[in-house]
Image (tube, rainbow, N blue to C red; front, side, top):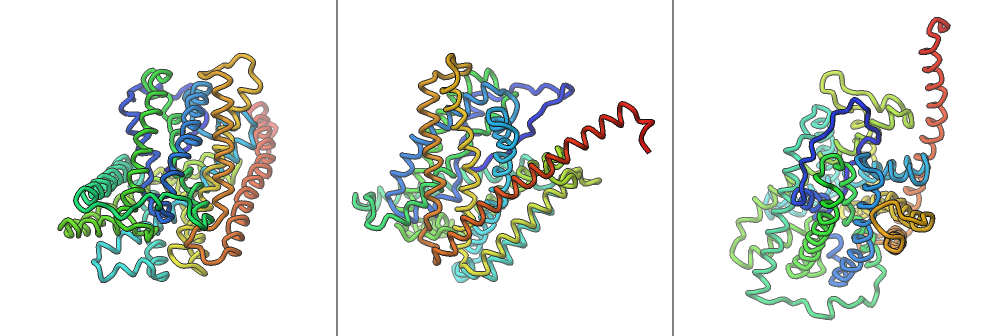
Length: 485
């Protein structure tokens, strides 16, 4: 669901990368980056109407996202990410804010992965222990322990290798295949209780509104192409086809997984245990109850791998910002023995842990998951406001387009994506059905959004002002070192 921001500059001494990624490689990469099985249960819990929301989001958000990625990657090839795009089009602060939101959303997203791990892993212990996932003390201890363990592994350099990313990807694919495959068998053998009325707009649609923002959150990931720009074979021809096929496959998997959950357990989907809950129920119907525990074990390891990979990847952003003096310079420290950005990893782990504790102080486990996810959605979508805004700006200011698409295509894709993103951000402020207190939910959402954006402004302007004097002092030292004390 999420991507890793790359560094934004390339030195002249940096070796040229081999262009090894073909169309098939990119299609698989996009599917892995976009398809996020973790968010499907919280969406499916709102019923069949969410299938229509998936289709609307694919047309109005995902298709424009593909155009934006292709256009911006063409204009700024091999430069790496949403930070640079916003910086080049709208200025330094907007670039920093885009990158900052990209990082801080992961501080909220990683705890949701920890909670999801707890909800799935209790199935490994057997049916008698499944209720532990709703126990706040158990869930908090397990989440914080896993968070600390993955932080340690990343500091040691054991959690960021290719193998753990592959573990997460393979586990997600297997889980989706088993879930959708069992749903197909159940439908063919026993039919389904789902009717056309289940796909109608509910009498009280307010709880469904939150799902739209979460769906947009689930569809991000195509901007990963910007990181891989120097490694794509013939990117101007390969990238558009790969984006199209990756989008089609991701959309089919999302819609298929949502329908599978509805077929298996209907609207009574547990947002933490929904996938294993559905597989366990369907497996029992076809006489395969024995697969539940190994399935839960495989999915638990996969979720831990995904969490570890995102912790290691997202910590690169404050690490680079520390080196660039937009954040405290000690964030740019590298461990003397393991050569990892340990300071940034520790800060990220501590902030994520504090957020988990604060939410557990007054909420249940499923509510905590939903609150963290909702605020992560807001921060994740901020960079996409800049991406789509860039398309509109190109269309409005360039009499002759300088990129891949015509002014009309850029305008309508940019406007569609921009309005859909704004709508997704706004609607996620409506509470999901797991939320018990509307007042405290709004305090959390509004206060959290203002807090993180305010921190971005603080770091940029405070450390931005410090950066210029440091550079001038360094230049003076180089020009006349004998004058210094």
